[in-house]
Amino acid sequence: MTRTIKFYETTLRDGEQTPGINYFAEEKLEIARALADMGFDTLDCGFPISGEPEFEAVQLIARNVHNAEICAIARAFPGDIDRAWEAVKDATHSAVQPFVSTSPLHREAKLGKTRPEVLELARTAVARTRAYTDHADFALEDTTRTEHDFILEVVDAIMKEGVRFVTICDTVGFAMPWEFGELIDELRREFPTIRISAHCHDDLGLAVANAITALRHGAERVDTCFNGLGERAGNAATEEVVMAVRTRRKDMDLDVAVDTTQIIPTSRLIARLSGMQPQWTKAVVGANAFAHGGGIHQDGVLKDARTYEIMRPEDIGLPAHERRMHVGKLSGRAALNAQLAELGYTLTPEQTSRAFELVKHVLGKKKVLEEMDLRRCAETAINPSAAVEALANEGVVAEGAVAERTAG
Image (cartoon, rainbow, N blue to C red; front, side):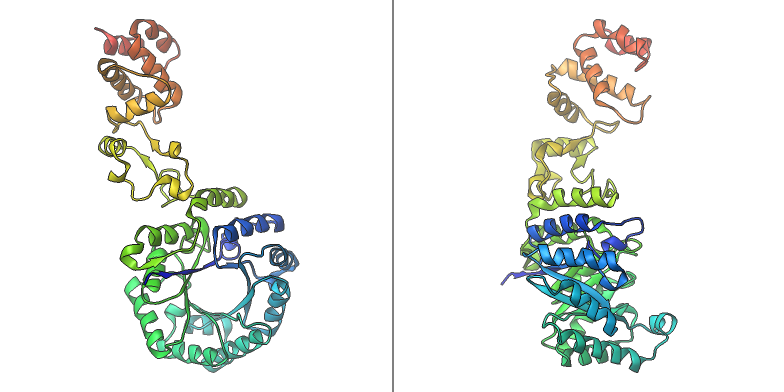
C-alpha cells in the first residue's frame, strides 16, 4: 500500500538561518499561510528563546494559522522549552521540539559535556515537553557523526519518556545515502515503534538523496526547506523532495499530500521575501528548470514535451507559456520558428533559413539574443532590402554582413 509521507517544513526556522535572510513577523505569517494551505503537516516556525521579535513572530503564526501543526524548537534546557511552549500554546495544533548535540565533537567542543550529561539533558527535555503536550519531538543534532551505541542509548531514554518523533540529523551533510539508510534500519530494528523524521543538509549535495533514502527505509517524516534554503549549503529542498516522490511514487510506493500546483507561487513568494532567488539551474523551481537550449532537445520538446521533461509545468503551478525555448547558438530552426510564432511571425522555409543565419551571426556579436533582435532578424528575413539599412544604422549587425546574408 502506498504510504503518504509527512513533512516538517522548516523554511521559517532553518530557512531563516540562511545568512542574509531576516523575515519580519508579518512576512513569516504570510509564508506560514502559504505552506499550510499547500498541505504541509508541521511548520517549524522558529526559536522563541532567541529574542522577543522571534517569540512574537512564532506566537503570531500560532494564533492565526489553523490548518497545520505549529512547532517551535528549543535547546534541551528548561527555560528554552518553557518559552517555546508559551509561543505555540495558542495554536489549534501545537508541538515543541527540543534538541541537543550528541556527537563527540559537539559534546566536547561546543557543549563541554560528557555522554551521561548529554543523555540526561535529552531525557529531561522530553519529560518537560511532555508535561505541556503529547506532541513532543526531539532532535539529535549531528547524529551522523555520533557513536552508534550512544545514538541507541539516547533514543532509548527519550522513547521511555514518550517522545513522538525522533529527528535524526545529518546536520553537516556528512552522511552517504547508504550509511543513512543503514542507520534508519538499525533504529527501526532496535525500536520497532519508533517514528523517525530525517533532517538532512546539503554540504555534499546529498540532502535530497539522503532524505529520500530515509523515507524508503521507513522514516515517516522529512525536514525540508523551500528553495533549498538553510545553513551553509542549505537543507533538503522541499520542492525537490515533493516532486521526486510524486514523480516516482509508483516505484517508491510513497506519495505526498501536498498541493503541488502551489510550488512555483510559494517558491516565488519566499524568494521575494527572503531576497534570495534560486539559482537558474535549480531543480524544479529554477528559471531554467523548464528551459531548453540545444536544438535536438528543443525539437523533441516541441513535438512531445515528455521527450525531455519528466514533470509538467502546470503540475507545479508554472504557466505553460513560461516553458522557455532559449534561442542560442546551439538552437535549431524548430525552436527559432516557435519563438518567432510567439512574437507573431509566420515564415516560409526560405525565410526561416535566412532568419536562422542572421540569428547565428548576431550571436557571434552578442552573448544573449533579446526579443528586439529576434524581431529584427525576422523582419530582415521577410523583407531583406527594407531592413538592411535600419539594422546597420543601429549597430546590431554590420551592413555588409546583412547584405551578404540576405542577398538572393
